[in-house]
Length: 458
Image (cartoon, rainbow, N blue to C red; front, side):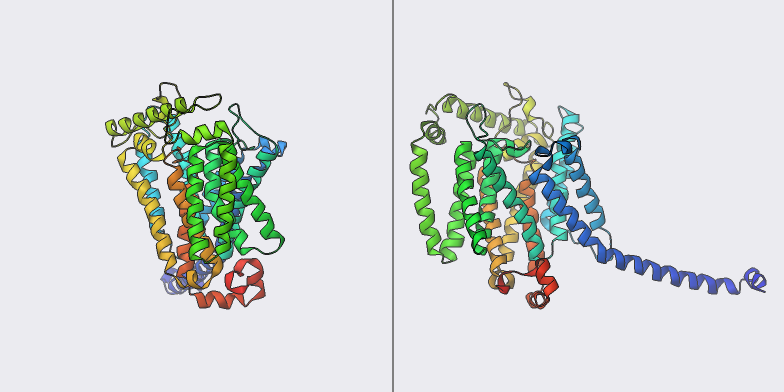
């Protein structure tokens, strides 16, 4: 009978309709599971990526040195991005992240015409591409101040620990400049100094929000961060740190009405300035910022700044003669007469390597991050949540520090500036959530324990 009905076409529609309903229910169940499980997994992958990038355990645990941790971190970020795009929710990409994807596309177009296509490919997808992916993950996945705090803590603690250990182990290079103990970008004195300048306001925010012993630990860390910049003898790092401190004093001290912070900063500045001027070599490097004919100890400070001026001029000329596609990402080093020298200016080097459109997109992404800060300042979260306000001020200071330091260092392919852009996108998303709903969640002990305890709960 069933066979007859099936052949006659009577029962088949019913079975088809039932199968379709079961399929719809199954798809809905899958979407629900994905939407519930997706974000914790993605955020966990993001935490692992941050830990691997900043702490680099393979530099301290020898067996891990045989594992390509950088590739592992990159795969984690890519898998997290794929997982983050799954689920029932509509994916909303912040404007700043869209600009970064356009910048990645522009740099991709530059690969075939590059002076060294293989090197350009490695620069775009091995370095810059990871920054875009992680920035998007931060802006897309982080939805609570507790989650943001975890990422910022990893960055602040890692840079502080590396600085302290580098000083303690007297890790000075051939020129007597402090370098990071890791085999990463922090090993370069200039990159270490700029990272310190960007991280300084984050560490200050954690100190201001901490209590008891934690406040003392962060205060000591801030002292080591300042000392680290001086010991790197990095002019770009010094200017970036000064910018960071000025913004912090204005935001935390003057606008935040923490008069003691202004007094402490003034005292520390006087002591630090007095100590710096007693070092002839460091004084010569600082004076060479405005006076190129000052001689330092060992290597001539005048020769250093003269070489940088020549590289800066070369990068500008290269950008003007290759305005659309440049000479290829990572290929400016092939143009220098001395060989493998960077332009020491993120903006002119990017323009020379990826064209004027890339420079415009880069500036637009940074501008979008500043617009995010302006938007965040108008939110109820900024007005009513002290922790949220502290992190907002810290990111504003970090962005200002990066803008200053990047005029004197080639940082356009490093990940840390794009992390800051991602942080601002995440804070915009957090600020868009109703503050009342957030406060209701804080009433739950479970939510409070796992990161929802913020400024209003203290």
